[in-house]
Each structure stands twice: as C-alpha cells, then as structure tokens.
Length: 350
Image (cartoon, rainbow, N blue to C red; front, side):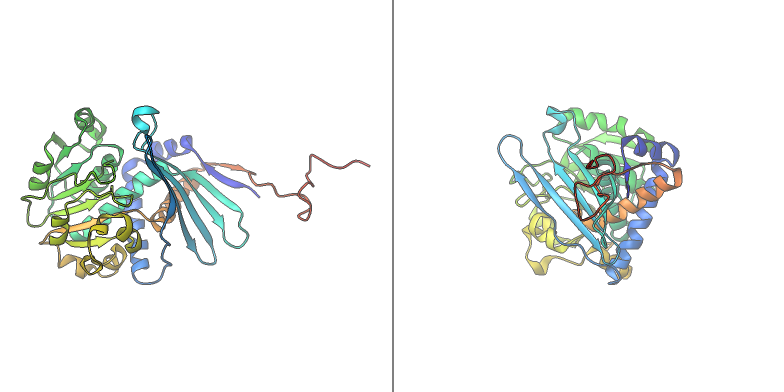
C-alpha cells in the first residue's frame, strides 16, 4: 500500500492554480462548519497536545498534536516552534509535518507539509472567531508581531471583513517596515505604530509574537475602542503570555481548547471561572457570541489538532482536485506478513 505525499512543489501548485484567496476562504468555511459540529457534540474533541521544551540558547518547543476520528483515521502533527530559526538558519519559526493514519490498520495514508497548513488554519480560526465576536463593520486591523503568522492573519480577516487599513508593531523595526510588501496583495493601507496606538485605534487586534517565557505582555493595557476584539496567538508555552491580565479580566474570553488554554494560553493567567466558552460552542450557538460584540472580547488561540485535521482535509481535497502529490510505498509490507525479511527483491535461494 502507498502513502500520499504532499510536498513543497504540490503546495506551490495549489497556491498558483486555486489561489490563496480561494484556499483561505475554503479553509475558513470548512473550519467554521467543523467547529460548529464539534460544538454540537457531533465530533470528537482533541486531547491536549504534548511534547518537549528546549532550554538554553536555542529555546523553543517540539510538540505532538493528535486527533482521532473514531472508526476512520488519526491525524498527527509534529510541529516545532523555534524563534531563532529565521535569524540563524533561514528557516520559518514554525516547522512541521502532518500525517494521516488509518485507524483500522495503522498504515500511513498521507504525509504533508505542516508549515503552510499551520499558518493558513491559524488565520482561518481567527477569522471564524472574529466573525462571531468582532463588530461586523470593523475596518482597521492591528497586529502586534509582524512575522509570518501576521501575513495569514491579515489575509484571513480580509476575507470576512471590509478591512481598509492595518496598524502594525514589531520589536524589530525592519520586520515591521517590511510587512507592507508581504501583504501588498491585500491592497490595504499599512502603517507602523506603537503597541499602545495599535490597541487604541484598532477594531480587531491580533498578537502573534515570539515573546519569551515571562517576557509579556507585548501590549500595555490602556485605552481601546469599546467593541475591540483581540485574537491572541502566541502563548504557546507555559509561562508565555502576550496580553495584560487586567485586559483579560475585563474581557469576554473564548478559547479554542480549554485544557490547552488553561495550561499554556492567555487563560493560564485566569481562574477557571473567568474563562468563557470554546469557539466550537460559540459556532454552535452564535447568538451568544453576537450578544458580546459591543464589548471587549478575546479569542485565546492555542491551536489544537482538530484544526489540523480539518486543514489537512482541505489541502488533500485541493491536491486531489488538481491531481497533485506523489504515491510512494514508505512502509515495509513484507510478502509474508509473518516474516519481516520476506521481500520481493531479497529471496532466500536454495
């Protein structure tokens, strides 16, 4: 049996032929639908991810994120967060792969890149949350952190709001200054600003930084629009936070995965009774979200494997549509399943 491989060339072809706007809209629509099913109890929830933390000079984490579709398959993403990658190795901060395993047999059905998939699905999740909780007339986006994830955040939100401008802040002036070129395809007015101004003047704010453990918050608490919605993405380690706890305690806080958010999201700063419902619950009960749009809201996004399972479905569907990918026999399936040495090319001669 063969494994379906989707590599860099296949993803580039998907972006060229289907286009990034269509791909992002498909991801947002599919993510919203599947999260609604999860919120209704029609889909299985995902276990909390696990992994390893790196200490020393090259800090970061390597995580395993599994999701099971009972009776069908298991999707597993192996992902590394390495904030030193762009500067030292010329690699993305987020690097990983995602696999699809047949539940009945355990065989590897598909293996794909996790870099683009993670960036697109994270943007799509913010778009789903913002569509529920942000003011529908929102036009100004604020970004704290102008790296790779900021690009797909701006892209995803531009698909569900009539954005006209972006205020962007980054601790590296060159990264902030270069953001406008990276999102030129969105035709938005981009202006570099202080974190305080980003908070004060934006309808929607996304925080996506590589702040170290104990180094937050990345934005000061202060004046903001009454209907401000915040998507916080960067709290992906225990002790790493981006938002001031005073702002969190004034806000209606929605989480993607409660177990993860309490441990390593912004919500690790809160008591259990200060944390609101999951995004899946709000997708299934949109009236509850609509009632919160006039006030301060926060989506505590840690990213969970259910999103990766959905995202892999979207990418595999696009690849099938275009006839992309390579089928390869990666696993050793011996000619005699009771003899691991029995192969077609190595036979014992009498």
